[in-house]
Length: 247
Image 1 (tube, rainbow, N blue to C red):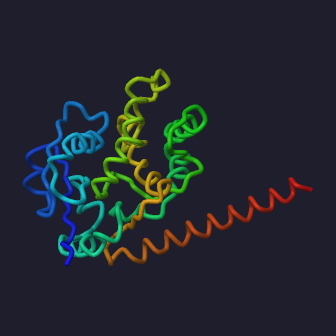
Image 2 (image 1 turned 120 degrees about the horizontal axis):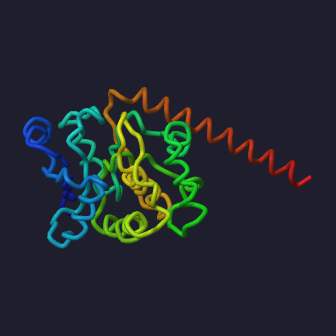
Image 3 (image 1 turned 135 degrees about the vertical axis):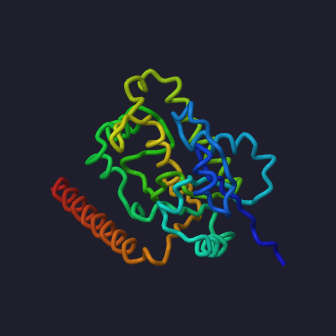
């Protein structure tokens, strides 16, 4: 009989208050230094990658001290849904429920034009393994996910690290360091990087799923239905335009 896969999720916090009052007992507490927040949770993902040989669990990933607030999961329901998905999928997302089924390109174009322009620039000028405007995407906001260690390694090596290198070394990154979010200037890189796993799983055909609390079913299904209708409408429009062009 095969042993049940094991998992660990590192819950990132920034001070003693969040550690003692907010952290979930299912997670591994992971303190993040507040003096350098340019890449936020992506730095933790990189730390885990660099120490992957010492990690015994089959799945590894991250969440934040705002997990309960953003996902609305109870501890019991979250454990049940994670354990039900282990072994069936290589990546398990638990993206904040209000963003499941969202189109990040449309959202950025409307709410964060600087971020949208950055996506356009990436697609046009650079040979990244991700095409933001055209590739299929699964909502991966906040880097709330766990992945099999082999998949985790592949993601970091082939997708995440190249984006680190861009923001650190490329002259095109100058002037693209910050974005206005929640009323304050915030580093822009994490807003790009949090999208990457959602592209990676589709491009690489990685088996994946998204879980959410049962009490959020109506909201999520409604959002997914609207997205499907919008995608179908765009496909029909593209077909019509192509037919007219061929005449």
